[in-house]
Image (cartoon, rainbow, N blue to C red; front, side, top):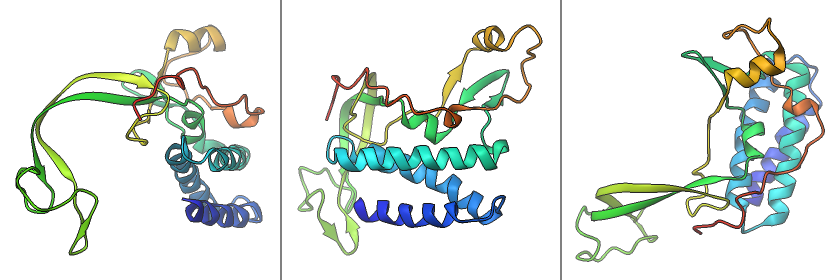
Length: 202
């Protein structure tokens, strides 16, 4: 994970020194914000120093994008509703989803047999394939909101924004459908939202 982060640092340095606007720098920065959010998610609970370093670099990348590529920093609008979908914004919401699944049947990813009846061991590699147990028949019974989900990437990729809240914030001239800039990265970071941290399924 730290090697991935070092690569992100090198790419961020190239983007810092670019003469903006620069199409390649923009593409690199947009990819970096997704990559850094993933590093934050994967390092949480295991490497707090890396989590914080990725957080700081993500904030910086977000600021570069917002100052130089404003068109990339807008709330998404579809089917009459607005959504927060920016990886920089959503990375600060340290909450994930932890499903409770009733498993009625599973199979080995290598041979397809019941994992209890085959010789393959989950996590081991066989002819270039990593063995895992796949759920063949199951049902999600409920989903809990937790600070540190067992599956570390089960995080929100989209959060709705109330049209009424936007109307109150923007005034009576606001019309649903107009383009709304997100200014999250123009302000100082207020820190990570950690309300759910005590809840964990890890």
